[in-house]
Length: 107
Image (cartoon, rainbow, N blue to C red; front, side, top):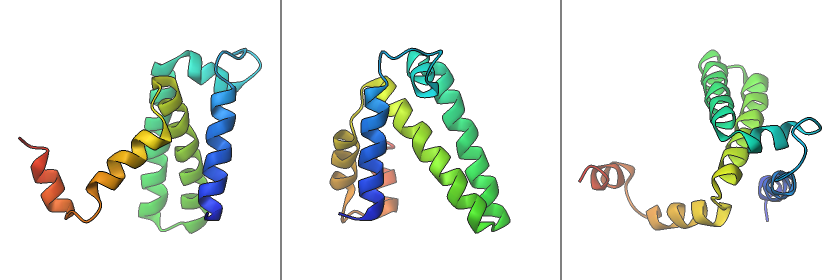
């Protein structure tokens, strides 16, 4: 397993463990208790990641990507979507041209 996969799995487990936690004591619990806020934060981090990428700032891009992934995991957990469900969707697209895959969703 890659280092990234290991860190992602640990972070996902930590996020899951915060479900039902005290929002006053845990930022993750606060986001999980308010999926709309979690989604808003995910959007903010996506924009910050795009800005860092456009500026060519590798350090900022790595940092913003970490923030983006954390908030993405929180949104998934809040919605009850597992990483296995995401992996299933990715696997279904393997070997398919990105253009062909996008065209198939337009029907």
